[in-house]
Figure 1 (cartoon, rainbow, N blue to C red):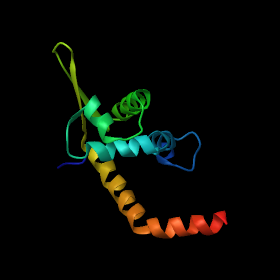
Figure 2: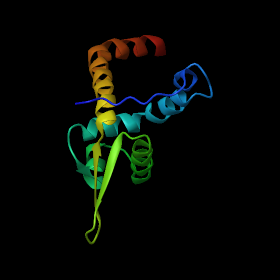
Figure 3: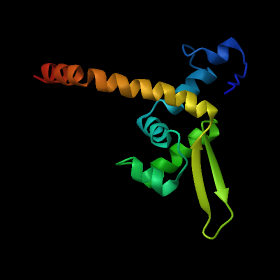
Length: 126
């Protein structure tokens, strides 16, 4: 697999700058629904309804908005088949698979520290 990296100005990639493109991208993808969509798709291609069934609690509207955002950012590919009714499928792009590695790491971190965080919350709340 060949990774394509586009270049831009260093200012565009600076998360510390309020006007950077990197911060805008980070803001787009750093939400629970985007992470769950990336995790739900994994290595698979799914239809909208299949993906919605994978992610408990997501509304039709939130799934639609997040899929559009992920597609706009080049992380999800949407394929429409000319059938009646139209069949639409979603799959992660190469960049989406790269994000998936990060999401998988965060899921692993959550599992590793779940009991620690749960105990800290109990202590804090008492």
